Image 1 (cartoon, rainbow, N blue to C red):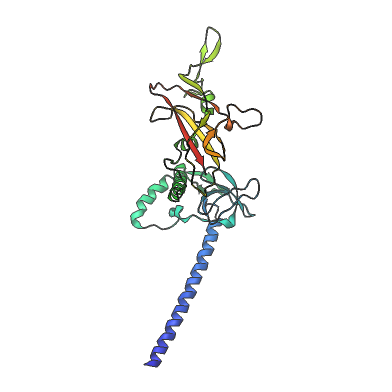
Image 2: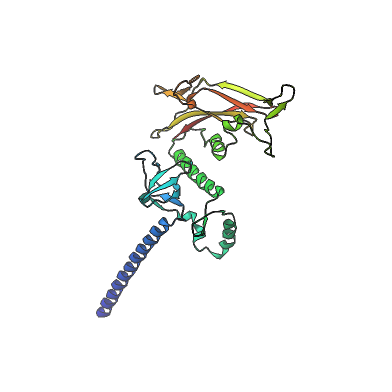
Length: 314
């Protein structure tokens, strides 16, 4: 019986060694497959496996876990990437891994998910071709917006959990509107707009008496000068504040009715709860510091006010 037990123990050890060898081989194979998939030009979305600070001009800073969209995979190992804020720059390939959670269409899915998967694939637009005519499927705006929303929500949740976000603060709604398009930018309200026929200016009319053009009158056109903000709650300790600013616009209680203007605030370490603004900047100073700003709107709403959104960028 002892001999049989010893033989069984030896067999068990051999089986364990074989299973360990198989597992190591599988891990090596998986790593090779991941490397090949990472270099695949059709794989565009990657996740950062570590923090990286820009070493020189043109590099893109990112943190571990951040999702990056790769635009150009260069042979030297420095790839052109875009983050969720729309910023582009060079990133090292060795800091990246394939974001498998965003490539469900590349792998098999359970039968109960096939129908929903087919519906998702219908929304993927084919917008480019390679030299040999092979179609490349690029991301859709809705998909990338979802990635950005997930990243932003996770960041806010983490900061709130550790007590870094002051009570009453929330993700900026006006910033999201500015990122979504040009509708709320100052240039949209300053540049003449064409009619649907593209044959005339929508905001300009012909004056036959003076034989010239003149602009249509704007119902609301205001110049606002920011002076200061007081009693601002400070952020939590250990959080590096990159910018303090105010965004303002015309608002009727539910909709933004004008351009959104952003003004950066200045503050003193002795009194961080008070923000001040420059009345007017001159020379080489950026216009972002200019406390004078304008808002325009042709809305017919009878309940129009000015919405001020105080923001902190971490």
